[in-house]
Length: 140
Image 1 (cartoon, rainbow, N blue to C red):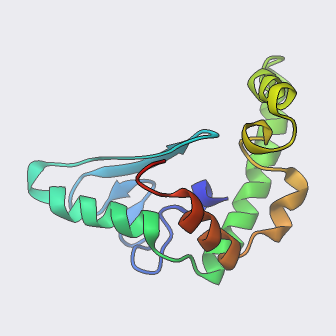
Image 2 (spheres, rainbow, N blue to C red):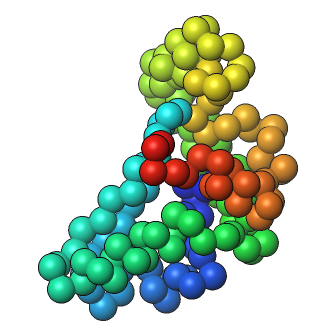
């Protein structure tokens, strides 16, 4: 859910960031994650480095609003639908997740990367913020 709203904060809205492209600077920002780490990457010209770094910190640490949580719910449902559709054309689409689930069960590294489909409705601003505070740290 957080992947779907990482650019949607109270300070940085669609007017600031469109599809990962930062307005006025020509730079871009992206987020990727796996079961253990979260990666934030940005590209910009030298002049905008400080502003881009400040924006990356805001994106990673700023509390999420109720509106962001609603966007996360809707986009997460669509992500699950897309994954099911694409899996019809790729018989190996879930191999990595099944391997991790076999090794770790339904906890820690064995949980699906998109989360459990039935838990999408439980996403709210408090849950997103709690997850961010617990998991987005310099050590991870």
